[in-house]
Amino acid sequence: MSASSISGEVRLDIPASSAYLSLARVATSSICARLDFSLEQLEDLTLAVDEALSLLLLDAVPGTGLVCRWTPGEHGVDIAITSTSQSGRIPRANTFSWTVLSALVDSVAASVADGHVTISMGVTKAGAAVR
Amino acid sequence: MTATGTGSRWTERNRQRERELLAQLASLDEADADYRRVRDEVVTMNLPLVEYLARRFRERGEAHEDLVQVGTVGLIKAVDRFDTSRGWEFSTYATPTIVGEIKRHFRDRGWAIRVPRRLQELRLQINKATAELAQETGRSPTVADLAQRIGISEDEILEGIESAQAYSTASIDAGSSGDEEGGALGDTLGSLDDALEQVENRESLKPLLAQLPERERTILLMRFFQNKTQSEIAAEIGISQMHVSRLLARTLAQLRVGLLDEY
Image (cartoon, rainbow over all chains, first blue to last red; front, side, top):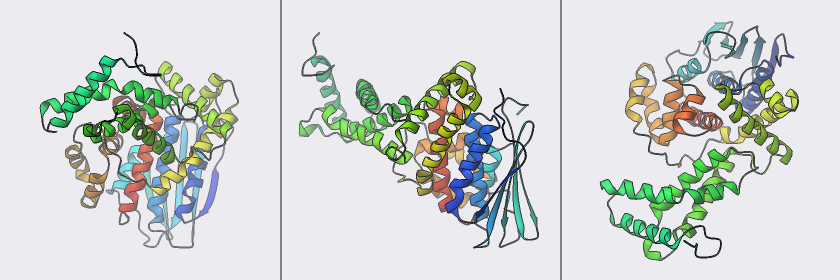
């Protein structure tokens, strides 16, 4: 009954501008729907990508790009979004945005390397394992 | 009992009762214990009108219960604004207000006119099947579940979902007018204060949250601080899960605009 016709990483490079948020949303919905997520989880995932991108945009160097990566796994998906950071710092974990992200996905973490900040999120399919 | 007037489903006795209630309401102070009771009765009496008007918008890709829900908001506004001294029939006065709310819902949704009819119908089928399957299985369906139920391919289901995602962007990115009045869900500000305890920028958040309609604030609190699922919230508030999702997206977008110092 699996709808999975996707395996392997999907990558999307977009300019660091809020105009491209909708593209990342549609990609998230499309990719994760093919991975057999429920509609409700799809909507949470879309909100999470929206929130993570918006957060990274606040500190992105103008004129640079954002890289979104979706990596399907057996039980779910990992999503990583990387920006070129002005401050070279990761987003603070006690902000409202971070609270929102934490509620939408199973795991969320931020890391920094060479001026690039990455937000990584992991979500398990509702039926797949203990949530 | 016979109905009077052309096309009216109402008896003269109903009409009489409604006039009495509206007159009574006009004389009561809002703080009066009877005010709420009388207002509720007028609203309840007129729910069939909302049902009727909501049905005029069927087959436009929105769940009927969502249209009834927003239409009822319009009805409540009409009750609160009705001026008995003008001598109008209440239904004459309320109809444009209710229809206005429903149309605004479509406008906020951002796709009433622009989505091709085929996709609207597909979306409606998906909405219907989603509700049915959720009812039967107690969980949100997957694309494969929906394809099987409707009897079309998974790709077609995906097209329907993706089109909804794409068309909803206008309303999400544009924010909202923010003047929607919330329902009587109890004051959620106090509990939000507790929930926000750990959030660093709560002082800049508070005024933004205070501006939100009560329902949006409640949904936000339930989803992000009480970690309830969209379905659980939908069941508690009495709207569809898709409507919850939409309100969350809109509310987050609104807050984001006000919270530019988040990083």
